[in-house]
Length: 474
Image 1: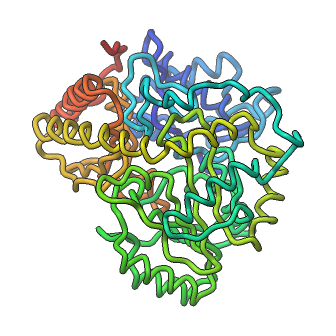
Image 2: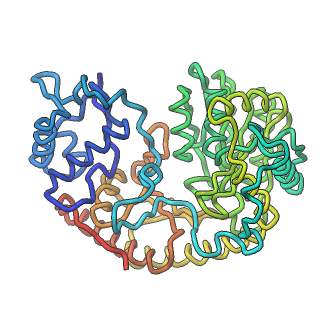
């Protein structure tokens, strides 16, 4: 068995000696399933190198966990999680998703630049904030795996207004866009089905593909989106099951696919008989103009969500797909949850009519914070480079040298959580990139960039492996 790969942020933010904090982080990784019963851990030398700490620290953490009975070591076999642990169980695929999304909150005092949602007092418009009647069952109350008919009708009308004629029968309500992607990848990626993605791509989609057992083919992108020639060649050479793209406010680059490129992609997919998924989760956040759906025929699928406009706890997303697919997807959803929350869907139905006003407000917030973030980075980190995004909440930053994964671990020690570029790539490319969110309040962004500057200075000076510290955010 190969050694499991630890996640960034493995060192706990709790007080105490560094070896104890690493031991606590390893315990947490076992609890989360990143390491399962019998899993072999990285060697002391390899783990020390990946985390930017001394080998002595790793030796101390491993020794402590052996004394507790969680680890066992044998000459020639390395260090493993005990195979007989009663409550350990098997390992599960490690997610590339930012750790804050898995734990619910970053370490105390850490500024999270991996998030994608602007949260503030205006998250719920006043007319929609009245919850009167939301606790009352709808007519015919029961499990509705496709979603509430009234909400499906409003989502269909929304797509029709945007230029993609849609009926309620072509809409499936999901628990956020992540479930929508997971359902699609489970359907098309099973038994090693080939899914083509952009490179780089959304980390949650990569997680879903791995969980489904799909084979991922990552194709290069440019300022207009996924490149046509590599896609044409891939469709001719491989039995592709699904094409997954983000045409508007691509994650993580923030690019918007040109009209000509959209048309070419749609024609290629239709000619090959390959369903194409347009993930529009961030499309409402395009800075100029309105987003338009990918021109599709019978094979077109659209993923949408309300969480980026309102707040992440509103777990309402949807799939717009041809009727032939809807029954299959609904059967998978029934197995997962029997149906999305009735109350959440009623609230979403109230929010949809004000979604365009909310999008306008969010775009204004994000544009101002993008300007501030860009100014701060140019001042504090002038050797970093990026292209201004056309929309969305992220800056796709290139480091002048070094490895993003290593720097992300170092930055965490200075009180900032970022997403290393390699996690957005199925082939672990873009190792010299970081995805930085600019959704935080202005003062928090200033604190974050100051800390990034300190971390980068330590990296440049070769003093990046010192002890991690605790931080507070004013």
